[in-house]
Image (cartoon, rainbow, N blue to C red; front, side, top):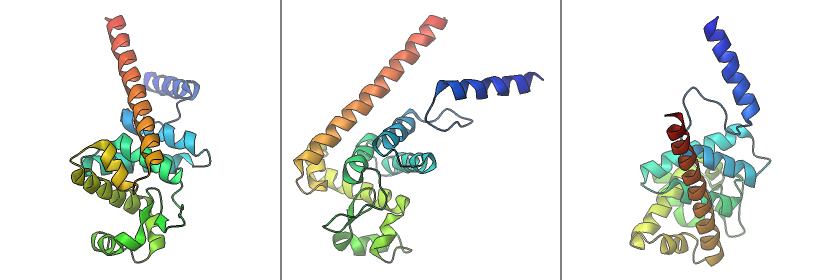
Length: 189
């Protein structure tokens, strides 16, 4: 009886809280939740399951390649507007707008199931390979964030500035949430 009442209370609180990150048994990573909210606000047509999946892949890729997840999310937002079917006039594909003509051989080596450019619409392949490209750009620029973005975007200063602003906003949101959490803990003592 107590367990059922508790579960109903939790469900009620989730419903009224208006949380936009799907409920999980475990509290989601703050970064994943912030990225999810960013993705759904930028692309309102993006279904919640895809937004959640993309956010989780971003976190995974960032950890694998030791990059800032917010930077990867910012690149996705400003390169493709979180549209995994995006294709540029120059032949850039998917969420991170990976240039097939330049990277085809390396992509096929790392992802043997990828045979053609349209396979870059696979979110996991696109985000993983795009993050790897960005990591290489960061290495070439001595880990200078601004220079790394310029290399990734082939000198696009507008993209660099937009991604920088997005990263700043995401970090501010995360810091505000941490501050609120600390204040709640102090108040509870």
